[in-house]
Image (tube, rainbow, N blue to C red; front, top):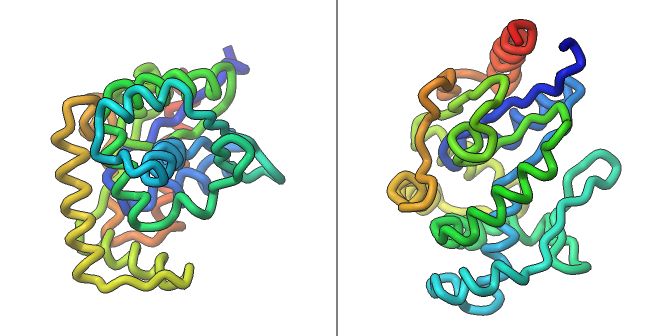
Length: 226
């Protein structure tokens, strides 16, 4: 029983710091980290390049054949479209919005959920996204709903974009954040919502280290109770 794999599901809105904190949590627990949002971004980028982001029928058809793969290089997750490493390209703001749009297509979510479950099977894993606790890992050892105010999330995203040399105005980032929240919570396919048995963590007034420490305590308690 002690060797039974554990899974930590972290859901929450855009800009809540899920990827950064989930990655740190996975490292502290010696578990594999899977950034599911990056997988949707890769699909979004694929459709942007084909000018098909707003064509649900084209998206549903193309997602069956798109060659998407997750590979780990020097311990870091990389996303590939065919032979192209798109790990940096998928971080552009327009790709983020495209990811939200394509993820509303049921066929996209079906394929991504199957891929994500396959990657996580038999592993100690920390996975973050929008529907991990509700759809991908409904039997996760621990489910966390990580959030922060829209204003704080917009400030964090602005800092992140500035550090990457892609500055945007706070007003634009905030409006994009609010629009993304609406899309994610109102889509028909797996809308963003907390799992009934999730633990809510609001990081609005917490540092990254404080948030990760809290999540680690929650994870260890849940793992020990298995």
